[in-house]
Length: 276
Image 1 (cartoon, one colour):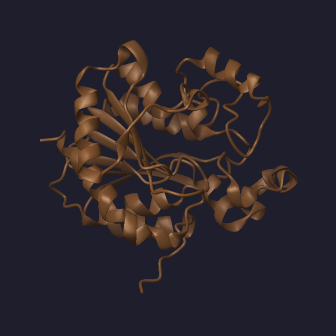
Image 2 (image 1 turned 180 degrees about the vertical axis):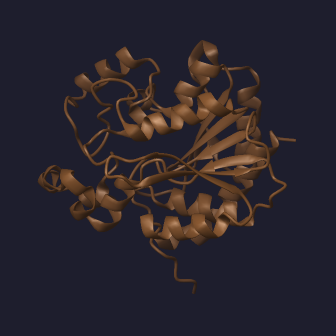
């Protein structure tokens, strides 16, 4: 049986270094604790698809998925990959509060390190994008989420976090043709964000769903707005997708990876090809 590594920051750096032999690696930003956020560029740098993962700390199987997927690509492929948007959150989920640098006392006090979603100071990166912001905050207040937390607190202002800004800056610079945010769990694909959603997005979502046997769905209200795919659709009027890999309760165990990866690989390949 294959023994899988923890997809923590040390592993990520080694994997990115090895991948630099066949793609262009750039550091697009740093986390609150100073960890690098990396982009892997295969093919041309503008108007290509983007796949990003590791938004939520305990969804670290998504990081492993994108790094495995990158290892199988060739220099002739045309896609940009950001394996881990939130490296501090991943470190906290894998290694506990000691990974949270100066925020360690706050993380310790919550008592939820192993189920950590947010960045080091308790902002959920996938609620921190400027998409329907006022309604996002209203729904948070109605749910009693009013301060930094292990999950679902979107911050005090949009793009307040360096991790969020790293990704939005990359998108503004490279003008991606479409984006996919990889999360866990649920085996679902989300594609819609209101009036700005191009008509062709549903057709591609359906093809991705067919490729992997995932349902094409609508997210629960508290998960609507503030997310990366929402912001991308609203800002660029291009297709954005969220794919929820795997099934169970987060954090999904590493032992789920080998069984789920072939399915997700088919979805990612369909996304890159545009369904052709």
